Length: 157
Image (cartoon, rainbow, N blue to C red; front, top):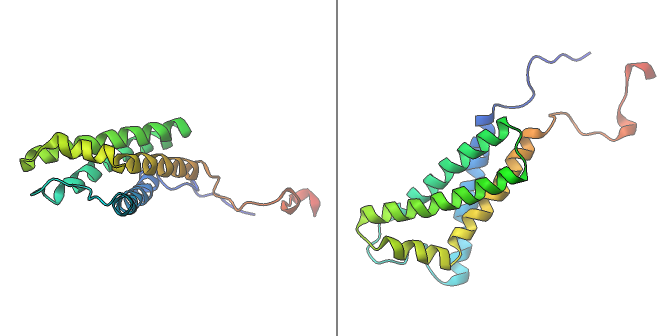
């Protein structure tokens, strides 16, 4: 006999936090790979603050997390994951733009450089993939998967 003392699912904020860690990791890894492949840096403008990409990734992560938490609670699907990726990439561009303004450099040049060289595409792909995985994980039953012939009922004994 088994008892169920509560929901087998962790809270939505816990799943979103774990997904956010993977999201940020994929962005950093993807930016490194893109940097090597295109022979460019994430920020090519001279005298740019190293905080600019950090602010941009932070903005993307906050937006991504809010959409994913809402998607978990409303049992979102791949459409929710796509929206999370799109809005996270837009938040990334906004973070680049506004943090570049604070540094006193050409904000439009920073945003254009990131769009042309594929850094924004990295955020989009990372956002969609991690949101889809997080939403799928939130829908998992929490039970060990079994083949139909492995399932036993009380009537068999």
